[in-house]
Image (cartoon, rainbow, N blue to C red; front, side, top):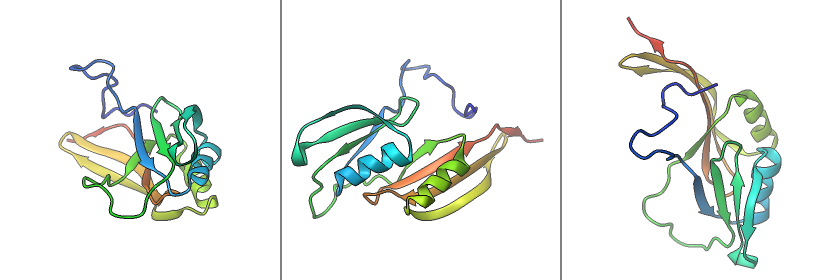
Length: 148
């Protein structure tokens, strides 16, 4: 399904799109296993050793997560990321896999109609906490239903 609310190309900076979201992991192996084995991401490349390890994982359409080992205790930098969202046509399967992996579901699988000045957009989504406490959203966005 194509997300009709967003054009496929940027008219100002052609070829622009989200490449990756990155964080430093508390448990590098667990995080990499979750994203590869549960969510089906594939390793693009990895580098480093010990707490200097990192991996770039493709989630399926070129959008990636980059996971660094060696998270340190203490305060986090300002400008905290609220969550990142992954679009998914098979959202019920994503929900099942995340639930079976015992991730904390913070918002159950829900269907909503999002109001838009041009009409309404049906969305289906859920939120969960990933292995490092990162907040992840899975979302399926439908076609705009024009208003009167």
